[in-house]
Amino acid sequence: MGFERINNLIKDWGNQALHKAKNEGRSKGIRHRSGSPSESDSLEAMTISYKKRAADMITAVVFNLKRSLFYVRAGAGRGYGGAKGSTWTNAAGERKRTDPSSLGKAGSTPRVEKDFLKDVEESSQAMIDQVALATMDEIFNQAFNSD
Image (cartoon, rainbow, N blue to C red):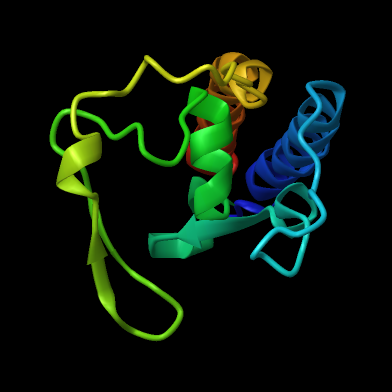
């Protein structure tokens, strides 16, 4: 079964969604600040990838974001940890964890949430519906046109 048409639908949506997310982020004032420890703009570094399973059909769309964008999206800031915190490995390979003094302070930061992915999340259901219909068409065509 050929999934080229379905994969192209998914890739077209993914490219549009990535472009829309970056534009939405810019419109919400997300920008690379001077003096940032990060060398590059987090929005520009955002990429998209696709996971494939059996028969070369795309089964997942993955948005690759820098960690800093998660904080911006949630309106979180340094020193305002959640209820349980997190652990991560820094660029030097050192294991880090949330400072215990910041636990439970999430939501009390003066920063404003900038949910630049909301439109992308909302449009994903329409894409899923399109893919489902295209997949059904492909299955029926294969079943009834295979002589």
